[in-house]
Every structure is written in structure tokens, then in C-alpha cells.
Image (cartoon, rainbow, N blue to C red; front, top):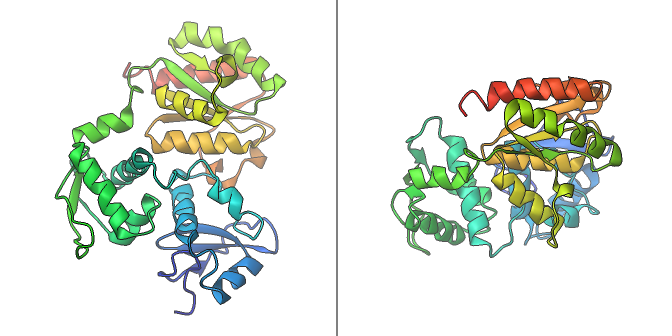
Length: 314
């Protein structure tokens, strides 16, 4: 196979020339399994010539780019200096974290379900990649765990047995697990550049937005805690009804947090200063951003959007 994907080493890739590259040394590959791969040209040639290099991590890179595409977030470019950055990305679950991998599986089922109760055919390559598993037996373990929890309807499979392509349905308990408490929460998580300027702006509009919508704008810096900041961010997004993602400073954290919330099926409200929208990454530039010039603009537009999207069913 002339253009075999350097990550999954199974599918044939094509080079995407329609998307703008960051430099002359950066190209974009499209793989049917891995999705959109951003990679340094020299590193691509290196991986192609040395198939055993990063053998323990190629399935993780494959899953990472697949998830970035699914969540519509900006990925890290793969090169010799960025491998550790990708491997420590907060998208990637710990290899022994059963619940995190089960969540990935449920999210994949929901993405493939057009309607509640749809039957989804399990494709071994795609589903193994979706949960960052290296081997089929790991996928079976997580699948059987979800069936035991009644998150999924379908037949359990035996490890070390012949791969059985079967049909599965995301069960009501699976939908409830994915939804968490977001249908009753009155918090909206704010993802933004953590600067004095942005804290001042959002803190100045919090009371007015709550008075007019009933929703609290939650800013992580307002919370006292002793935990890792990323763990707290994830926990608060899980507890929130929706998320406001402001891209005025093209902040990588906002991309990640918006993508994570989107993967959970939460409402994501995109905002950006009107004079900064040209700098927004192409993966989110097509979204309907609230454009604002000052605090008054932002308060008015957020109030209208929240009432239109969240309070219509509250």
C-alpha cells in the first residue's frame, strides 16, 4: 500500500491540500480510521521508514487524532518534539482507567446513533481506536463492562475468541450516564483565557445574566480547591448544563474544554471579540460565534442565546 497511514498502519491516507498548513514542514493527512492527522513532513518520512518506532504509542496517536476530529478541536502537530505533549493530553485516558474508556465507548455509540434506540454495528478497528485500546481483547473487556452496567444492549463477547461483528444499542442507562446532571444543573461553565481582563468582564456580567436567565456563570478561579486544576475543570464541566467558550485569545484550553463538553452532548455557546474572530482556528471558525465589542454587548447577546437555547425547555 503506497500511502499506508503511519499511525494505524492499516488504511491508506490522502494528503489534504484544502486546509491551510501551519508551515512548509507541516502537512495534513486524511485517514479513514484515524481522521485528520497533522504531522511534520520529516517525521512522517521517519515513521514510514521505521515501522517499529513508537510501536507502543501509534495506536494512541491514531485515537487522539480521531477524537480531535470527532470533537472538532485543534490537534497538536505530530513531530519528534511533540510526542510527549500528545501522550500527556487530557483527552487520552490512563491505560488502566476503565470508566474513562467506557465513557469513550458510550460517546462513540451516541455519535453513531441518529436516533434513540438505533442499532449500531460494531466495527472492530473503529471501536478499538475510539477507546484508545491497543488490542481487541481490551475492547471486549470494556464492552462487556458496559453491558454488565446495562449502559449498552447487546451480546457479551469472549476474550481471545474470534472477532464477532455484532449489533449494539445505547441503553437508557447509557444515555443517563452520558447526560449526568446537566439537564437539571443551573450552572454554565465559562472556558476562557484566565487573565485579569477576562475575569473582570465575565464577573461584571454574572449577576445580570443570572437575573435574566436563571443560570450562574461558573468561573473555575472562583472555586476554592486543592486538586489539580484540570481535574476541577473536568468535574465542573460534568456538573454544568452548558459551556461558554470564548476564543478571543485563541486559548488552547478553551478549545479542549469546548470539545470535551461537546463530546458529552452539552450545549456549547461560542463567543469571541469581534476584532479577534479572524484568528480563531479553522476547526471552530464555522461555528455561530457571539461577537462582542464590550461587556454590554456580551451580556445582552449571552442573555438572548441562553434564553433561546436553554430556557426553551427549562
